[in-house]
Length: 160
Length: 279
Image (cartoon, rainbow over the protein chains, first blue to last red):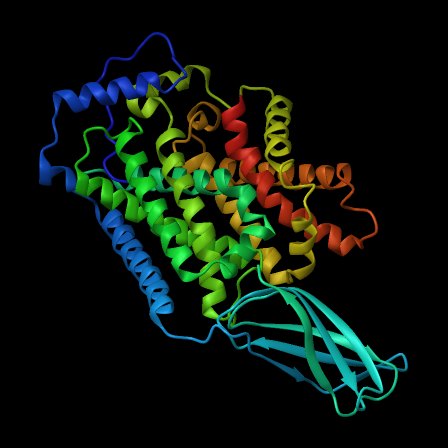
């Protein structure tokens, strides 16, 4: 974004052409009369060098991290972990916060989860749109009776 | 060597163009999802293709036909960097990335959005520039200047048109409600500050196409007043759009206000940049 050349020496026109055609013609004319002088055109002020340097670091960092992810060996099998927090009584029912952690390198979609309490005495269902790779999602389910022996399973999912 | 003022104007135009041209993608949940669905290989390819597109656009857009290859490369890297910064900023304000989010998911979302924003930055910098900057007609605008001489209500009406035009592409979508309910007060305040900054950048820093004619030279108090009025128009048009598209029904006033702030970022771009383009 450097050296968008200006042409302030040009005589003012009596008519305004709103399209950029005129601007481009002016630039083309200027570029023809002042051909690229190599290194001189790279003169930047401190702000432009700062933005460029920062941008370069960001872009190289992003590309480097993506390459790292690509070359790092990881299991393609879907692995997950379901954890629970302390139930909270609300209006005579028990709300259980659930954390579903995708431990694998595979993102999955339309995830159906079943949470059971008291050895399948009572169960509740959860549905997640997405469970990204190496990420977690948090949700909550209600039980009528005080939860014991909480267990969670993913019943189905789609591969996006 | 160019002045800091010239450089700032370019970056401000890039900011406006980056946001304005990529708004529909920034507010689309399917695009956020692609950030963690696509493999690192896909994302790398996406970065590569975008970089090639930027090189080509910067070289052949007609603005820099005389530029050396190294200069075009530097420009393209800058635009990618600005795309990453702007998309990080807006995704954070929209609560689509947050501190503590797994870096892989956050970077995926940033990457997928940043590439489109980078192209918007490039196009905005080159195409949204005032003709005066190139043709030496800076003095002309003094004759038919300015906001003060134009009818106040005419300006409000045109701003409202710009806000409605740009906001209409986002207002009916589910994402507005989704972002509103998942945003904290801090997110909403940061989004309001970002909206005000974008309005000020477009109107007073960017040498945006038409900005000189309308905003001209003003004192700081006048500038602050105009920015406030434009934001008021933006949030007003956001309420109107939300009502028109039925986004207010069945939700609490607090959620409606959140929705309006979320949509007002979009309409503020319309009321500032959009207004300058359509009149």
